[in-house]
Image 1: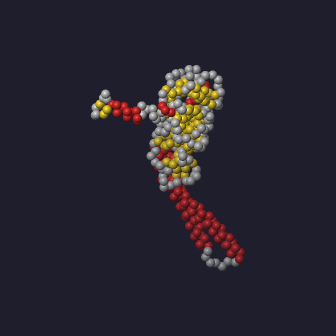
Image 2: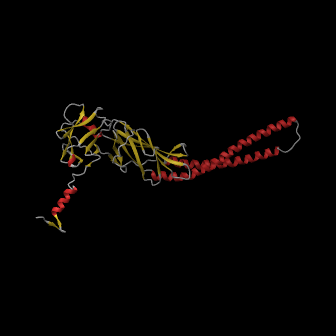
Image 3: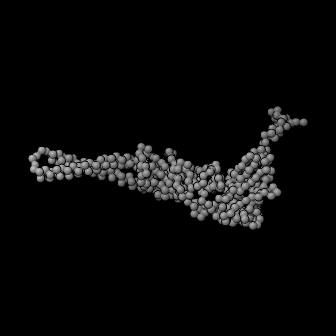
Amino acid sequence: MCMVLRGGVCRCAVAAVIVLLGVSGTTRAELQQQVELPKLTTQEPIELGTIPEAEVAECKLTVLNATAQSSNAPARGYSCIKENGTWYVRFDPAPGSPLATIRFDKNRLLFQWAADAERSLAGGLRNCVLTVEHGKTVEAVALRTPIRSAAKPLDLSRETNTEAVEVDDLPAVDRFSFEVTGLQGYDGTLTFSPPERRAGLTQPVTIVLNPVPTISLSVQFKATLTKLGSTLSLQVQNHAVAGQGGQARPFTIKEVNTALMKTKTLITNLKSKLAKDEQLYTQLENRLAAMNTPANRNAKQQAAYNAQVGKLQSQLNNDKQKLDQLRIQLPTMENQYEALPVLAKLATDLDGHATIEFRVLYLVEKQFVVLYSTEHAPATPPPPVQNVY
């Protein structure tokens, strides 16, 4: 006899709907994109996710690792071979027992270290990606989760800021890249070079700020990733650049305030020089005009007169060119001087508060793995790519 639940719904009907909809969780895959392997001393299995039970029997597992060996192990490869329903993970061609096993408990995919797994061989497995082929789908599970920490605030008392992170079992490869995701603490418009914000080892990504749009003056933070042993370091150089391809000057609080005082003095001196040079130029013009009055001269006197007039005219032309340059230079310098207080305020606002958010990636074949990310950078890996850094 069917029991009727509150609201007039038959319990049998509810059970039938549950079976049809697969509420038991066995009809769709829920594999983790990233998983942190347990410590070797942990004998309990961890779950990598689930797939539909109907696809378990034909499921295929592959370890991708050709470009992601650990610096703690020789540059060989990991593999997983299926025997009697269990995949045995080995470090080839090392002899001995498997390092770990991967198996299904119903539709749950479980990973477990072997009791005698050696640290020197097992550590590099964290740098690999496990592909799970089930049904018509191939999914990737990175065997490490990214290290995450708060980014260091910019210190604008110095020209270069360095942020270093120690990474256990750091892959001994050069297929690293880093991606700058933003400048936290700055609300203005940013541009990036290159536009995709990503570069390989020792290649820069530059964040460009234009705090004074009316003039060609930018503040640039040039970030470069380096790797030494188990340490990854992001070096950031901060500069102010005047004009397209102009000279880069350190963008520090001290430098900006010094430039403010120096520019003010230069403008005062330039105005004084311009006024004096204009006065001398007028005197020279008057002198040349006076010499052009008609006079009776013999041939010798005329030759001397012509030479003197030519000399004065040449001097007048040179002085005019210098005056024209000063007249162009002065408004440019005045515009820069007006922008310097804006730069000084920007430096004060960013100093000790703003952070460059970034993440470090490496490639395992075509799969990205996130190795490190700052607090405000995405921790999930980007989609697979074709290009290699």
